[in-house]
Length: 123
View (cartoon, rainbow, N blue to C red):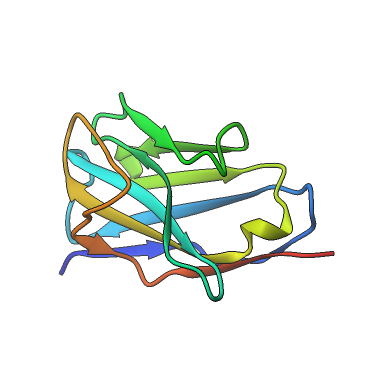
């Protein structure tokens, strides 16, 4: 069974950092692009970052560019999202998703989704 599981989210102080992990089971992530998405209360889901299967291509939404960094460790079947300089507008449920694409990635159209994890940024 193909499954993606996000690490447990937490409460973060404004200006703080958090790393989320997305671990795959039932398949290997090597040739899969992985995207991170988030949905804040009352807002549409937003694609914030993605990385290609070979790790050679990545994208960031303007809202997180310069603050968030996506990386992957195929040996551990894991993709990480390092989030720095967080602010209350980053409060949302964060999801990872995967689709087969060794070379490119995008911020829509993924086949496999995790269940999401809550991240709250507040003092």
